[in-house]
Image (cartoon, rainbow, N blue to C red; front, side, top):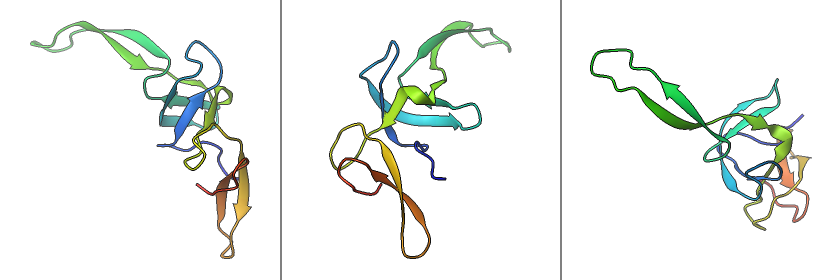
Length: 104
């Protein structure tokens, strides 16, 4: 089975507080159906100074969201698309946009 979303894909958020935003996939947890997108689902993390000279601060970083809340963006039609699988002559399986039938 082909993965719907992969690392470094551009995705569109379809549900939640960041609905309508786009970003690049940073990390994926396929067994938990979670995805981390750059600039989406930002949370504040309090960081304690561990060594002498370090500064305690509050960092803002991305957190994981459900994979069902994002859809990949097609490069040719520039819209969020559903993904189909297409097998090539050599037996390789590639992802294909359901709308414009282009592979990516």
